[in-house]
Length: 250
Image (cartoon, rainbow, N blue to C red; front, side):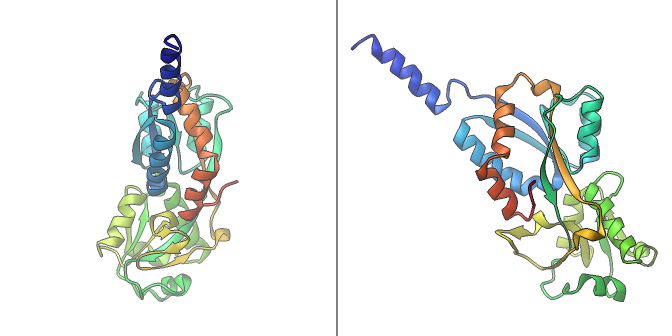
């Protein structure tokens, strides 16, 4: 019996993940902050790995990666930057895929402010409209496209308050610095319902699809925990979380 014990001990360690536990460093688009934190908590519990995530605008994260930031994967808010990184030889070929499709919502912290968002925008009955910088944030670009679809871009431009990213855009509205703002549905939705304030989910035909791609970067290609995280993102647990926050998956 004595020779068997070390083997059993080693097996139990492997099963618990303590032998193979690793750390992953990822860059994540700001709109995906809440669902990614929930996914990370679930993944860490199930795998034993540790995930360190930095959240920000896709444009800034892309620039940081280009300048050598030590991220091992990018979860972007668009498809353009991951594709560019792959084409520039900074990403693992074949690892890029669409992990979520986002939704835009015109939102107010006031529970009675937003009913028909298009009618509200046309009425001008608001002090400021917060949007994310369209040059850095795909949700900002979708906001501009929505205003153009409504024929209101020129009318509302004097009232625009531009956030550096979608998180700051949300803060402007949440703190009352802007009456209303175009934010990611995931920032205000839990379990399929808007949980605070009032909002109008922008019809998807008013802007280009907000398809969000993920990419394993070259620095993460030899880290098995990165591969495991990407597999986890495609699994049932992660997809359930993604849907709870108002995203679609392919």
